[in-house]
Amino acid sequence: MPVMAKVVIALAKTLDLVLRIYIWIIIIGAIISWVNPDPYHPVVRTINRLTEPVLKPIRRIIPPIGGLDFSPVVAIFLVYLIQILVIPLLYRLAFSLT
Image 1 (cartoon, one colour):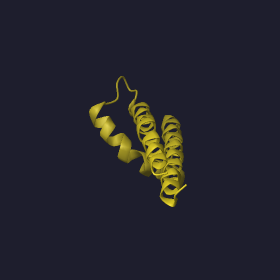
Image 2: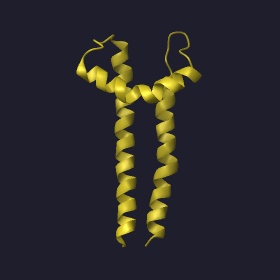
Image 3: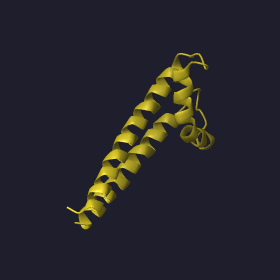
Image 4: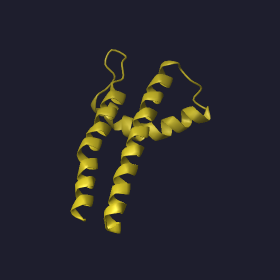
């Protein structure tokens, strides 16, 4: 197997892992928001910094309905969509390089 194919496979696996971790970060952020955490706690600030760039535009399109924020659900759906569309394309690209 050529080196370039291995690099593309490594990129696909890494991207898949990063997206899976990001889904868990979104879930943790949603759970933390239910308990009214200290906004200055380093964990809370880190999770907010990681999730807000994705959740904020979604909240502009779909505002909270009846006090429920559906932006984490939409964000997780979009991350899954990226996984379903991009990861197989990278694998196909890698196997076409062999």
